[in-house]
Image 1 (cartoon, rainbow, N blue to C red):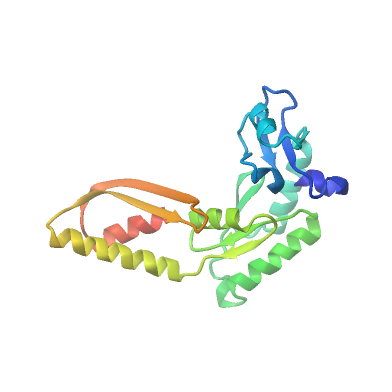
Image 2: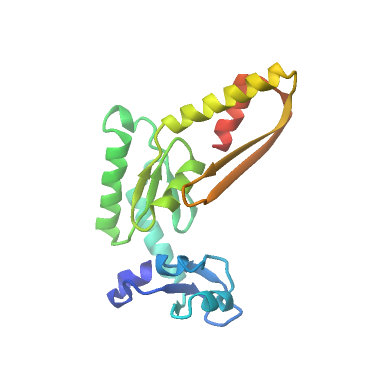
Length: 209
């Protein structure tokens, strides 16, 4: 968290950034508080009940904007910022010269060196999987989702469409569910015109994945 960058005495302590009154909400929190179930958007009153020893700190939007701009400047090549603390980077083509994992790992170190901020990132075939991978990599880590998962998705979809055609059935809904070993589950769903064709369902499933 930015607060720790400015005050090293806060290292290792459970921190919550947000409104100081009980009517406020959590805007961000450290990993030490997340393990108690605290998360962004939660009422401060509830967060205090879950983690009584947490320190409640007021946010500093001016500082957040400055550091967000610093990070964006470092990753300026095809960068998309969706939130003040969330950035997506298109590294397509990098693999031909450097290798995407090597390049992003070096970028990870560059950001930390030039801004002093702890950064987590996920590397995958699309934004959704990268976002999930980033969550798994926290705090201050990195996770690569191998392309074999994409191949597995294709194989599962082909098996499903084969079963549909065998039973002379069609589907109008595709659901992709990812469940990790700790039972954290992510689900995406989309409605489609009635269909049972491999190429159509695979394309839609990849969009969700």
